[in-house]
Amino acid sequence: MDQYIIKGGNPLVGEVEIAGAKNAALAILAAAIMTDDTVLIENLPDVRDINVLLEAIAEIGAKVDRINRSTVRINGSTIQDISVDYEYIKKIRASYYLLGALLGKYKKAEVPLPGGCNIGSRPIDQHLKGFRALGAKVDIINGAIVAKADQLHGSHIFLDMVSVGATINIMMAASMAPGRTIIENAAREPHVVDVANLLNCMGANIKGAGTDVIRIKGVEKLHGTEYSIIPDQIEAGTFMFAAAATRGDIMVKNVIPKHLEATTAKLEEIGCEVEEFDDAVRVVASKRLRRTHVKTLPYPGYPTDMQPQIAVTLALAQGTSIVTESIFENRFKYADELARMGANIKVEGNTAIIDGVEKLSGARVSAPDLRAGAALVIAGLAAEGITIVDDIVYIQRGYENFEHKLRSLGAEIERVSSEKEIQKFKLRVG
Ligand code: EPZ
Image 1 (tube, protein in one colour):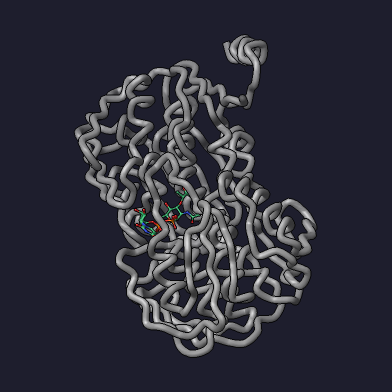
Image 2: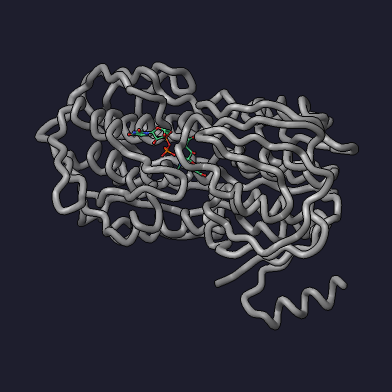
């Protein structure tokens, strides 16, 4: 299994280009099959989850033509199968977006129930509640969700909690459900807006995306379009915290600063200088950072996908910080790994209490999930000595060319897969 080996201590300095947003792209690829015309999608991140979902879309019979790493042409006119294979849902939960897309277009869909994952049980009851409200019969048969409807119809749906996935999945199905649908308590994430914008470019009639009330007027057909994915605010924030934790100076390019406001506010609160440009942000951390309290919330609150990254940064800050995770029930699995690097972190329920230390020391750690894995890399970059991160396949699910981008900022990091390569790295860096 591949690992990252890191020699910490270098402040990260320079410029980095942010790729397209993984969590927008996954839903947009699913939505693209809702027309029999061709949809051209640009600014795709070249990450494992995207490549797996493209395989799932090809598997059900759609034409998938990968023009290059970041561009794909999809045509859903040749779809033969409305049932998605278990191997895809096992690899990426977001294959469940094909439920809303297939149900909206074909009035039937079959997708295996996604399991939980490393950050929590992650039920999809709100997705199913929305499909039923739109007139679909939804059953769980042999571990698969089987949804079908003679005809879908508009509905007034109140989500019991803010759910990005449920908002997007219901929005897709409702876009082709005759009548008017209102989704109350909708998620407001930028990627929800991106999916709504794509659907509207395909001829849908969706208003209010980005607010907590989305209004949809169902249309009979959708048509082809060309669309470019928004930049990934989570990848951007990850590099912003890499600058903060290593006392660096990074210009993060190709971002939408508005999408980063909660992250920027916290970085400034702990003592970073953040300068905003039209499509870039510059983060400078010249001195030891200060403690803070942070609680994860649905957008525009502080993002849960940035929770491990701020925690590892606060591990080196002056004072005691409190990090509260209000979205997922099990998103502190990295805490024990971080403690092995010398951090003083204590998890009580959904709260981590972090007493900042002067320094972290390199150790062998294991990535428990995507964002925690990236955060442990940040910890290794800030630590003294050598850190080896195992199970980096999690990180490759959501970060394009992660080690290359970090190396371009002066990081001593390599992807290795043998003891020999580890020794070679150690010899080289001394
Ligand atoms: C999306 O997951 C993202 N994944 C997650 O990013 C992100 O952490 C999350 O939104 C919150 O922003 C993708 O977009 C592919 P939710 P999603 O539905 O849609 C509960 C990453 O690192 N819930 O907003 O699954 C759920 O258990 C990943 O890129 C229900 O109870 O998140 C959670 O506690 C990790 N029933 C809360 O709501 C439901 O039917 C929010 O989940 C749906 C959700």
